[in-house]
Length: 339
Image (cartoon, rainbow, N blue to C red; front, top):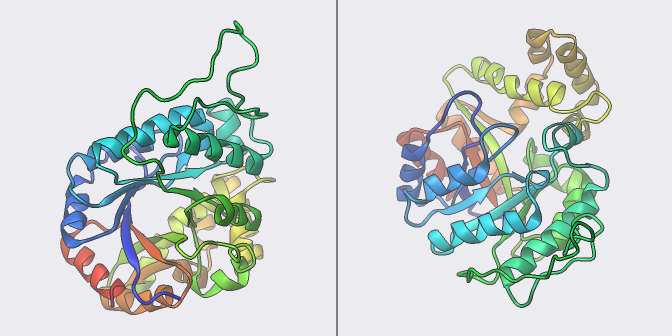
């Protein structure tokens, strides 16, 4: 349990045209927010927008939640991270995630099997690139360096750019218990999505048991401010239905599995069935009110401020607000989080 929460913004990825949230990030920077995170799916990328916001701010930390592991080789990701870290005077936080088989294989053209082993190997290479202690080699099997084929002329290399820090914090986006345990073992933080603060210990307590004392749990939480709670919850159900129903194959959907662990397995299956049948409205309506309310901050701003106590009473150390942009609400949220 933490007394005061760290706070940040999760600005997500573009869902249509260009989305510039510089004004909100600058406001958050001025108000004392700890983080501004960007994301990527299969459209806009996380690093370009992060650099854009970094150039407009002074102190707020800059993170990816998440940069997708199949999108880049580990050395390419390390180059992005050390570049933004250098330009921002050490404000970079590298959030990584394995994505899923539909995106990894269908969009990036890379294999998805053994995501835990891939993540472990990936993080190790990124760490060694940033540390710059010696030329980087890796036996593989997922990211062998030098490449064991081709011309045979590959050689171990060390970054020609000097990092401003020998270690950049790495957070992992994880949903399954084994992946969360890996986060606690090899990373500096965990980036959970769709998390009920009252169930963190019961669902993930064993996975998090070995985490260091300074390990961060930075949870993205959608914020929907409205005097009409029913309308706010209806809005909260829209992305939930999309992730449960459409962000994954019918037989392999990590978001659906996560909702099941929260106690809504039957409802999640109903949402998926309606979504895959083309009944988007039915899928949204099938998301239980209780589920939407437990993992979002919805309703009047006073109610949202009160419900932040649930997060302060949980193992979560940081709340990344998603969907809020205006100065009065940003101010009220940081005041409530800081107690």
